[in-house]
Amino acid sequence: MSRASSSGRRWRNAVLSKLTWRKSSYSNPDGGACLEVADNAPARTVPVRDSKNPEGPTLILHAPAWAAFVTAVRHGELPGV
Image 1 (tube, rainbow, N blue to C red):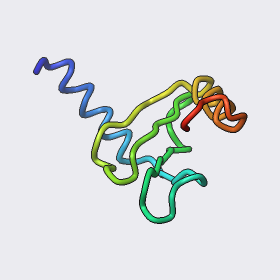
Image 2 (image 1 turned 90 degrees about the vertical axis):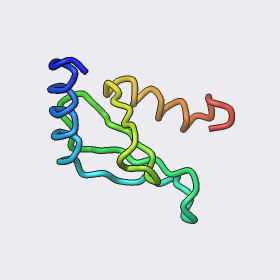
Image 3 (image 1 turned 120 degrees about the vertical axis):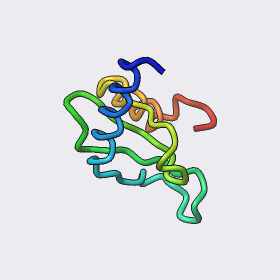
């Protein structure tokens, strides 16, 4: 692993460990398909992760992309979601 990717990973882990995560209001109460979002992320970013695997990968979206996704879900524009 290069020094740059190692330091970037440490920075990412340090930032993600300080976030406050909340579950989607649409999550299955039985522990099924649960999505968590961090509201206190650095400006204009929205981290998203699987609540069943909080140490797993985190998808970091730009705020406008997240807003477009949420709008599409609310309007039923994404079949199967």
